[in-house]
Amino acid sequence: MTSISSDLPPACNSGAQPMLSATLTWLLASACGIVVANLYFAQPLAGPIGQSLGMSPEATGLIVTLTQIGYVFGLLFLVPLGDLVEARRLTITLIGCVALAVLAAGLSNGPTMFLAASFLVGLLAVVAQVLVPYAAHLAPPERRGAVVGNVMGGLMIGIMMARPVASFIAGIASWHWTFFLSAMVLVVLGVVLARSLPERRPEAKISYGALIGSMGRLALTSRVLQRRALYHAAMFGAFSLFWTVIPLRLAGPDFGLGQGGIGLFALAGVAGAIASPIAGRVADRGWTRPATALSMLAVVGAFALSHAGAAGSTLALGLNVVAAVLLDFGVTTNLVLGQRAIFSLGAGERSRVNGLYIAIFFLGGAVGSAIGGWAYADGGWPLASMIGAAMPLAALIYFATEGRARGAAH
Image 1 (tube, helix red, strand yellow):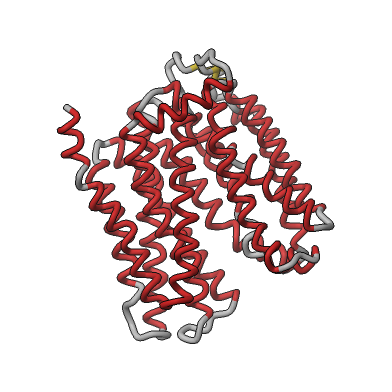
Image 2 (cartoon, rainbow, N blue to C red):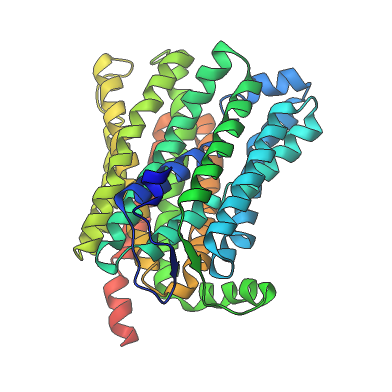
């Protein structure tokens, strides 16, 4: 640990010159990926977990739903603490708590305990969204986009690797061991971060109630936050629709893939995570507007590409893999561009605007998943993909009004 700590500043507050080493950037990116993966471990294991714990089909569906609900609550009520509480202490406390929640999930012997643990895992895993604005605070302004992009790259890899890793562990041991191993890793991560993170004491001297109350003002008055959150709500809705429906399509009569093949297909999406550091550097160069438009067009193009090739052919499968990478690339790019923009609003409000930003687009993702399931059942992939493409297209049309809105404001 000495080598990690030796090149870090002993302390940092919002008024000091920010400093961030390459080693610490890598550590923060890894931490985000490790923590956020816990949101997705249960998704491919919902069936085995439900059967093992004697859950009804309806209760099994609550496993994912309660984790998502917990995450939204965490975004709105825990992430804002980053503007009030010393960052290292807040991070270590939340990681310790999420480790206990993950361990409780692994030890569960009945539905009630597992569902309660699922909610707590979602609630507490928002520590990943505490670390992103923390990294932005430590980064010099001219490198802020690159740093946020690198950290978000780790987070996206964690999201994309969680499902296949959980399936692999459950396949060679049991679903319990997925959570046991994750809890162990979280404990080690907490120890490393406790020894490595520099302090950052926010300047805010307000009560927790006033802190939460101020989020309403931020949501109503910040045009940058409003626009970037709505752009990404549409993009994340398309992302969620795609990844909700594509496993059904791949398992259907056209392709007939088993779980192993679908898992390998999902792994291809990890390639889209390379967009994070690229998008950050693009934003630092002042190219946010063209990059935003291209990211939206990439997602529209991904849905169009998914129709290329004869149904069920090897060519069609390969083009769908390319479409998945293109979609993930576009969504990840837009996410990082949005965070770079909202983190420029003010150092004292970064945690609150980040919590609002993620919460708003997360709701867009929930809508995309729900619409995707209905559309595929009613009209197959043609209807689902048409709706999926319409989401980023609507965002692009709204984005085209941004210049006129800015001009009117002046």
